[in-house]
Amino acid sequence: MAILYLMQVEIATLTSFARNPEPSQSKGLRAQGVDMEVAMNVSDAIRTKRAVRKFQDKSLPEDVIRAILNAGRRSQSSKNEQPWQFIAIQDESTLKALSELGTYAGHLAGAALAVAILTPDPVEKFQTLFDAGQAAAFMQLAAWELGVGSCPASIYESEKARTLLGFPSERHLRIALSFGYPADEAKLSAAPKKGGRRALDEIVHWEKW
Ligand SMILES: Cc1cc2nc3c(=O)[nH]c(=O)nc-3n(C[C@H](O)[C@H](O)[C@H](O)COP(=O)(O)O)c2cc1C
Image 1: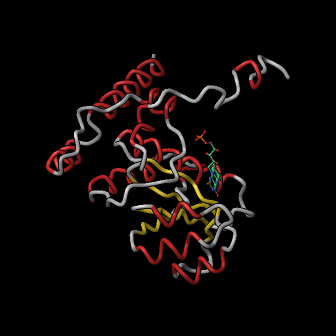
Image 2: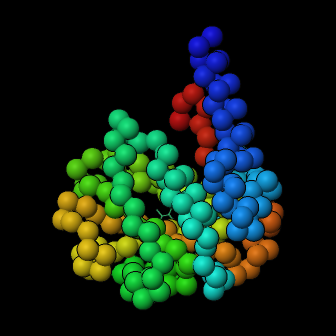
C-alpha cells in the first residue's frame, strides 16, 4: 500500500514537473519568452533526445541555465552523497580552451554553456562516475524539454582542465557537457533515428543470461 502510494506521488510529481517544472521558474521563463506550457513528457524526452554538437550563436536565459543545473542537483546518487560540483561556463575563451582538452571535445567551443562535472577521484569509488552520469542525464533531459540541445565531452587532459578552471586537487574532471539551442532546430522534433539504438531483444536477457 505504502509502495503504491509512493509510486502515485512519484508519477504525479513527474507529470506536474513535465507540464510546469517549477512555478517560480516557469514564471521567469515565460517572462523571457520561453513557453513552459509546451513541455514534453519524460518518456518523449528520453525517446527523442539525441546528441547536439552544433549550436546557434545565442545565449541561454539565466532561468534556463538554472533549470538545467537544478535538474543535475536533483539527481540520485549512491548514499545520497551528491558527489558532484558543477562549474557553469559561458565565457567564450574558456569554452574554447576547454574544447581543446579532449580529443572529441570540439563542440564545447560553440556552446552557449558548458557544465563541467567535478567529482572526487572516481578511482576510489566506482559509483562516483555512475552518479556523475546520472546528473548529466538529468541535466540533458531537462535541457531537451526546454528546446536546448547538449552533448557530453570526454576530458582527457584533466590536469590542464584543473589549471584552466582552478578547481582543487581533491576534485576531478572527466566529463563536461555542452548546451545550446541547436543550429538545426529540426533536431528537436525529429523522429528517433532508425537504427539509432539496439533493439530490446538484442540487449535484454530475461531472468538469466
Ligand atoms: C560518457 C560519454 C562520453 C562522451 N564523450 C563524447 C565526446 O568526447 N565527444 C562527443 O562528441 N560526444 C561524446 N559523447 C556523446 C556520444 O557520442 C553520443 O551520446 C552517442 O553517440 C549517441 O548519440 P545520439 O544520442 O545522437 O544517438 C559521449 C557520451 C557519453 C555518454
